[in-house]
Image (cartoon, rainbow, N blue to C red; front, side, top):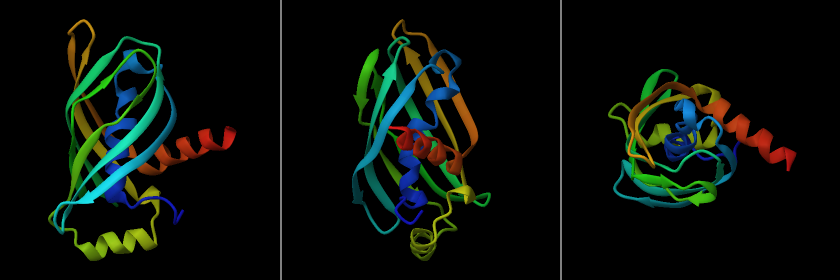
Length: 163
């Protein structure tokens, strides 16, 4: 577990990979791989970062916009962030969403350092909201609450082991 990123970096993954199944039409998406491609500090309490996600989209193309999320540690706000608009084409695609993550007011750098040393993904969950616009211009607000970070990571780890 020590090789996993701390919760402040997981928000980028949560904003993208945890959100897509929230829309019933998009439940057929298949994730093949994801990785954090950049992390750049933007002050003592924030980072900008990007994630690369490879997936198969056998539904219509769509765009996610107004993406916002928050990660909780044992029920208390830990980090919050926003993600740039992200377009997902039809077929086998790689998308590269980018965003900014900030520590919540009650969180110190010490809390982040501690989670890097003793990270337990089961202690974290997240909420997010976004607007999904399909290729025909239909828009829908999607909200996902209480996404367990441990479950998200375990699903990915199980898929990786099968390869």
